[in-house]
Length: 292
Ligand code: ADP
Image (cartoon, helix red, strand yellow):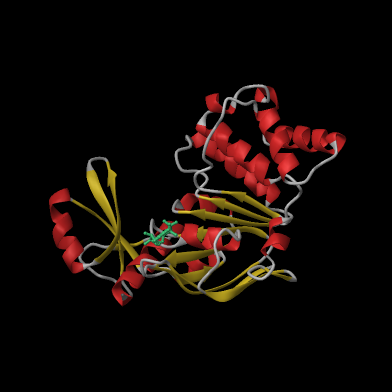
């Protein structure tokens, strides 16, 4: 279990990127959903011990993450948002090199580790290919392979599906789901489907604060009866936005389907809809904007 209590981070320029974040993250896949600028990367880097929060405490099992960062690093796998340079080195050699850096000294152990990871991430057939020539999906799978060296108990992946095509995304998410059965995996994303497809629990982060937390299905349930839809002409949209809390707009057969948030029937031709996680997410963001 990873526990964060009252984690706050203020950058030198005064930006309060995290503001009293308290979360308990159990084993399994955990989704951290939030728009750009919400503070997700700051939180991921803080948990990964790459930066120290201004205030607050973080514990992973019996490790005090802020006081004993080196202990956490031994059991951490981190796939940052920007994995950086992709040299003209083969996947096999790079992974072997990274295994050395992570302390897998024995050549025999290293060979087993590297070969197992290349197979697990479906990169075995391209193990001799230079990383520089890898596709986006292959890079992300390589990123997971390096994050898994040394059997980490805590894995952090920051916006991993951005830029992947649907097939690569699917393959990548399946790989994460397999890993997530036995360890804590935190998936930070602004893509709602990543969370709805994979995560048993989730939090919505906006303005550096946790706006909502729980199992996706329960959160969807709690929004029931408050989401309404109507098909409108495009020209009607501005008036709708003035009158209602419009959560989303989607084109369908040349017309626009809008979802709005309202505690009771807005009348005027609106029909109730079964809320999805997207409605939950957008209504949470709308409420946090209203509160700001
Ligand atoms: P996210 O990953 O959700 O997009 P970030 O953690 O990157 O959010 O950013 C949260 C806020 O902190 C944003 O307002 C961003 O501009 C600001 N921020 C991020 N990194 C720095 C930094 N090094 N210095 C100053 N402000 C930063």
